[in-house]
Image 1 (cartoon, rainbow, N blue to C red):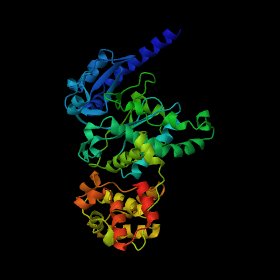
Image 2: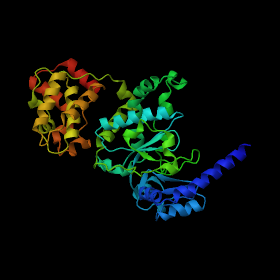
Image 3: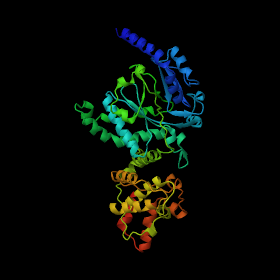
Length: 434
């Protein structure tokens, strides 16, 4: 009986595939997204040969006529996907890889849970100044969110971003999970009939991004590909459509509009997300060294008679105003001021005064969001001088600054020296936290 039902289901889906994939607009949508990607057809229960790619839109229907029911592709972008091999080492893959998209896979037993998670993650990405976000239905009970390669910085501190797959996408995914899971639990708990997952505080495990998806040459369902189990299409939707979306909206023969899954992103608009994720990971790494760091209770250094003349030259230069790198500079200044114990009102006054000196001022709403984000988190030191934050905004630390490694170290040493005295308590606090 089970085999018979499976056979009927397969036959039904195969009939739909012939009609659906014969549409030129569907072929075009899949083909356009396939460029520079490894593409692999699925034949109901199993995948086709690898590596493979599409040369023409018509290739899609030709594969369907041979039995293909869906199409899957890589997150990674390749110079020549057909050159890929399972025997390649990481260096060889890096040589061939042009970049990667961040693909966040949200899936659940319940479509409403997936919706809530998708909305929370989109809001979180927007908080990190990302405006252009792609969303599509997975074809079952979840959603895929994409941040294209264009939105990421191509290099950080001399490290090519394209070489950091899957490490950096994994870190971003973990960062998103850590920062949104509490809100997810609260929102899902507001559902009229919460499931056992909420009661057991397991909601994040049910709907948060699939870290496993972020792995070398892993495939995901392409936009407008069908799903074998549901016979629904993986359609692209807008953020506004997310709230009212129902799986029936993805019925393949009812699709009236084709949308681009890859948004027209601004160059580097996800830089802040990546850098904050890397910074978060640095302080939450499971390595013993990082565990030791995390155990230390950081207390801001309180310096009496604080004078700007003792500020590091790099900080003083930032405070004169900038034309480029203002967002990175804001991150440096907030952490610097919080680390040296400046009170909230004075800190904000200094930040807004600095912003007026910038060639193009940052929007006040952006500054407010970054301040609120900082206040909700523990105090951390500003980036060390050897980080790309300074170089990226045209600030070159001098030899003396490099010797002190961090702006706070520099200020403490100079402050003690200029006062002609030493404060053992402050000195000890700093030693314990640098």
